[in-house]
Image 1 (cartoon, rainbow, N blue to C red):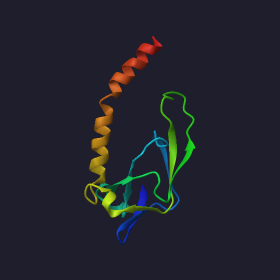
Image 2 (image 1 turned 90 degrees about the horizontal axis):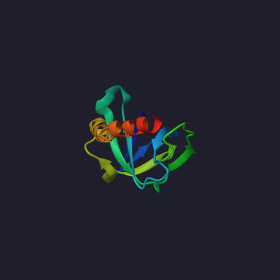
Image 3 (image 1 turned 120 degrees about the vertical axis):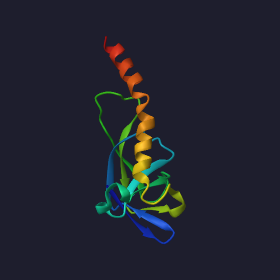
Image 4 (image 1 turned 60 degrees about the vertical axis):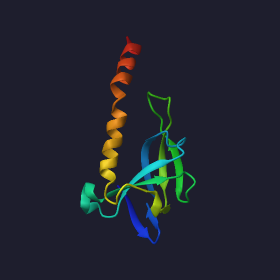
Length: 123
């Protein structure tokens, strides 16, 4: 989990943190980053932030070599003392885990269709 700390009207996220296997991370105009102040709080300590790729401390790392589904690039994102304005917090402090689960629910809707198309391609 990526660590964060409050720094006045900004949040400081990550210290040489690398987040791997981010689909379309190199092309995204906006990224949601999940981080925690205290890992001991578990899911209740996770907060979500909207991060623009031109924020200081944010960079795209290496592109992953994949065996399939090459239509989108999967990359590593580097967060090195990333500074994010407090206004870019998404939802409530500590509400990031719920946001992550809701995001997964929305993304999973298309997976059965995609899987069916892959099977048809094999047959």
